[in-house]
Image (cartoon, rainbow, N blue to C red):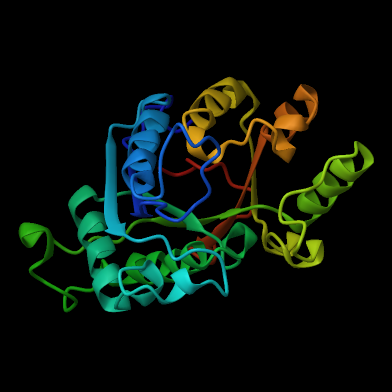
Length: 254
């Protein structure tokens, strides 16, 4: 939607997804998965026409409580100031009017999502501080984006989707987790956007992430009308400025 309206978009991906699942062993090995997923991300971004895709290059930290959390190359073990400085550099170089990142829950609690929520939120403020890292981005001046949005997956939506899957005899994703703890508390959602005209674009882009899509997985088993319905609305929490009107259009005022 944003690209279609003429916005210039930069996608920053913190990790390479190195330790994720491989849906089909013919697509990648544990040794090549990071490289394969980078290419999948680039192809996925080609679909809506986003050419500026950047990788910070950290190793996937894995799910909570796994040994991958402690790998020295993982995002979870990276020095926060180093990650934040990299993000500030991108903000000052590209001078965005709006920044979007994960919400505090990371969607479903992935440590890297939660970490990037914290780091991006911090970088959003520090990018305008002339005393912070003045030599970044070849001397690009401080820059304060106007809007910070956190991408949300409302908890009530998770509960509804789980129930639909259970009723259809499908084992829900994250079945080992308590459904009441997954997703964004509904009261934090400030902005709801109808993206139904772009569902086909979303599905085409999603299908580029072949190593992550299990053809026999729960989402693949959903009836098409339910899948399309779930992809027709996007939810956000407007984190800055605090005094902005709720339910504002994502591009309002830009």
